[in-house]
Image (cartoon, rainbow, N blue to C red; front, side, top):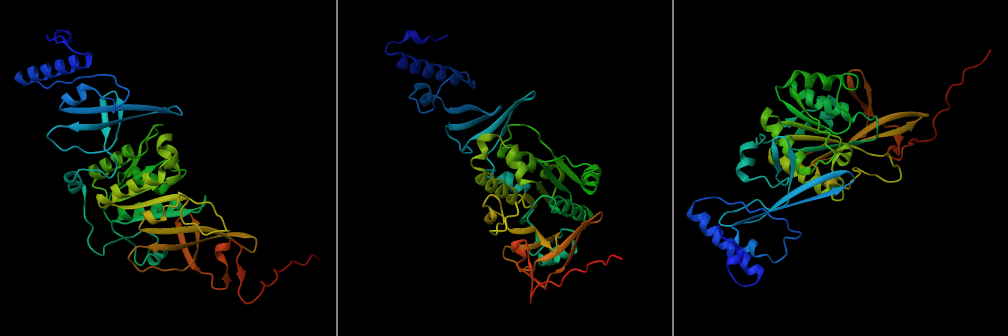
Amino acid sequence: MILASESGGTPQNSLQQFVQQLGMLMTTWQATTFLIGEYFSENDANPVFTVADGLIWLRQSVQRNSMVRKMEILKMRGQATLPGLHTYRIGSAGIEVFAPAGAVAPEQAAATATAPAPGARALLGVPGIDEMLGGGLPRGYSLLVAGPSGSSKSILAASFLAEGARRGETGVIAAFEQRPNRERNRLLADLIASGNVTLLNSQAPDLSIDEIVYLLIGEIRRHHASRVVIDSLSGFELALAPTFRDDFRESLLRLVTALSQVGVTVLMTSELEDRYTDLRFSPYGTAFLTDAIIVQRYIEVESRLRRVMAVIKVRASAHSDDLREYSIDADGIHIGLKLPDEEGLLGGRPTRKGGPRPPAAVAQRG
């Protein structure tokens, strides 16, 4: 045993000499040595940091009853490392580390990716919507479906996965609001029960974007999935640990980037409040992140709520710019015609072209 007190000088010099001698001794024995210490800042001058061949820094933070743990490889002499903060979770099986989303090693991305054929399209399973998209959603694209509560976002997501199953494709859905069951969404529940769709349903209170991406890509690789649904971004934001909500837009960018690297086609839903004073396509100002956008809205016609939808964009692809009325029943979504006699639809209360509406018939009392 080598004691630090055997060498003269200041305590720091003694510690540095001790670590150097210890390292030389372990090297002659061809031993790998782990030194464990408690430090408050990686910026503090410490002789151990300079002598050691590798330095792994662990940190944790507690906020609103959730604990987030992160680690960073500050140095690893003689070899490249994956930069950035890695979140990790401690469980019964030990430590599980999640690489920063979008920072997947090239060889891992290549092993996971399935490049879509040029010009290939993924149908959503609703003929009118596929027609509005210009023949379906281009493979490898990300689609944002934004609309108010009850506008059929989850029904459209289930139809997207069901169409894939009919074509022999498997899918993955990350549900952040309600667990799919037969009472809420029979079609989706049947797809999960049959094994055509895998449900990713994590209820952990301290999720990180890196962990979610890690779990999603793991299921994509395990089941060779080509379609992914995230339902919904609003629930996804609430599922994240508070420390990750401050930069939620950045988190979405990393999520979309990571999924695009593996070549899957993604449909994301988002709750969108109907605000008729302005035209909004995303509650987070993230419309530029996705390749395609479908917006659903309510309008009032003759004291009745009616639903309309439009394709806002499909990147580098022709698409319809019509506002189409649609209905929902037990068989799903049915796309109707345009409302050619109405104008000002996006204002919520359209007016009839060419003059006022004819008065409604009044029943005569006898």
